[in-house]
Length: 194
Image (cartoon, helix red, strand yellow):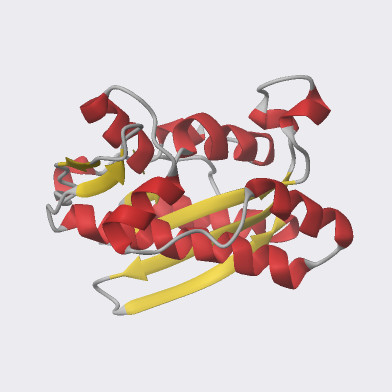
C-alpha cells in the first residue's frame, strides 16, 4: 500500500480573510509522510508552494491519503493550487472518523495526548508567525511534528486499536476505530493527461 499522511500550515488566519474560508488562507508549507510498503520506502518531508505539483503526484498515486481535519480544512486550503478535485482522492480524515462515532469534533492534541502520550509542540497561529518571520526551520519542524503524530494515530487505528481523549468531565473516552486497508478502498483519480 502507498500511504500519504499530510498536514498543511497557512499564510493567514481566518480573521484576515473575513471568516471560515480555508481556500483564501494560502498554504505556506505542507508536511508529508510517505510510505510504500511494496517498495519498502518511507520518508518525511516538507513541501513549499513551488513543490506542490510534485506533492500532488504522490497524492494521486496513493492508496490512502490521511490527515486530521483534512476534509474541511487542509484539502480546501490546498484546492487553489490543484487542477482536480482533492475530495475525490482516497481520503481518510481521522477527525471525521472520530466525529462519526462520538457525535462531535475533537482536537488532534487531545487525541494524541491520551492515545499516544504525546502533545503538539505549538499552535497553528505559531505557524503563521513563523511564516511571516521567514523562520522556515521552525515552520517545517512544527508542521512535520503534526504529521508524525497523525501518522502514529493512523497506525494505531490501522491495527484496530481504540483512540482515546478526555471529555469535558475529564473522563477518558475510548473510541473504537478500524482503519485497516482493503485494496477495494482505492478510488481512482485522473487529473492530467501528461
